[in-house]
Image 1 (cartoon, protein in one colour):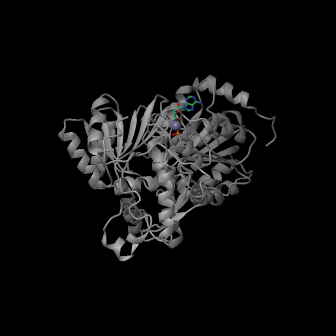
Image 2 (image 1 turned 120 degrees about the vertical axis):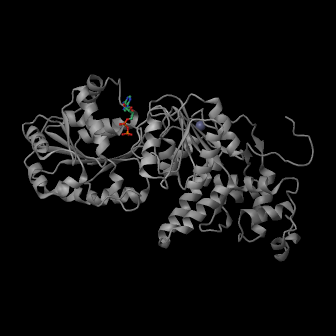
Image 3 (image 1 turned 180 degrees about the horizontal axis):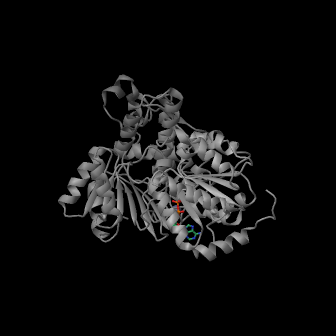
Length: 525
Ligand code: ADP
Ligand code: ZN
């Protein structure tokens, strides 16, 4: 393409003129600039991050037509309607149209009357359609929900594999812009490879939406928490994600029993029931949706004020995608994760159910551990999350997450940490969290005695705490990088270099943590 350099200023002008937004979000700027420079681009943003304008604005500035590949027929119509209302020349072609309608639209495109044309990926597999498209000046192919090209995800669509040959079959290769909310490295590799992006620029952005207050709550009575949270936010729409259908049904019963206008959604319900539930939620007849992760794909409800995770999800990608359904309108919203150690067991159980090849399983266990680390970290949750996804950020804490607002005082945990680390060392780094906790507690548990651990000098070294508290401290130490947990169903604790510094007295461990429980009333601060 031969044209004068397009600038971000021009793009911003279009944004104001057509959309009425004063400016791009930070992440959008990078993606839009990259497309204006006519580079292949992969944009990874959570749902609600504002992917659409990233290709719609360049479409207005680039010559000719932008072809948008979109998998959801219903969303296609909504998008095109929205664009048309704003005065942007757009149309869609899909199976709901008659042959004549399709021809009319293709003719309109040929006359240069369209800037954006939305199509389902299946179209790209049709010879006649490819021939027609080859006669159009297509300057950009925007691939929405690009993760559908990968078999790693849940949404694999064979027809996405037709995108690359389609692009290469055009007389002049357009730029390719791919978008997704799925940020796993495997899926990213697949998207780059299978869409055959050329010297692509990849942008991961928009994860730290500053209207979202992230919280992790450990040790809550989950049922009571949910009930009272809903009651005190009774006029607000919210989603509660639970791990299994059984949990969903259970919670649904309890909440509706308590007179709350709640709906439910999971894959075990009929299509009809699910559709009714979803409609009810969209139109605010149902205030609270209790659902498995089957709920959400393609749901565009902007005023969800909170997303509560009743259980820890299997990885950060899943978490961020689900939690990101809160606050799409930019208003302050809550993302609350209710964590219990049982959740780890559940996720491991689910992992074991999956007959996967070992490399992938390995990977899934690693991601699970990173999710657990997030649940135990005392760092700013937003920064921890951004680090996980490799998104650049300042070191400034967000000020609104549960770590930032934790008012418990920092206490010196160095001595406890030393006891834990030396106990792990004495147990030869061959045991998991609960066994180490039992030894530190001084438990008479059969396995402890069988291994002769009652003769270790660290046996009973933390007898003043409960085993649960000790386990919790160990998990916190693991999430802070003092310890590692091996992968697999029975992870083993190993000391990391940081722990050696603590043992040598070269590093102090400060934590907001469980104080000694049980004995004594001296903790009334
Ligand atoms: P996605 O496709 O990533 O889920 P959308 O493109 O639907 O997200 O955008 C999500 C919301 O953010 C929409 O309500 C949209 O109008 C709004 N939005 C997007 N970009 C901006 C912006 N630069 N300024 C203000 N609002 C924006
Ligand atoms: Zn924070």
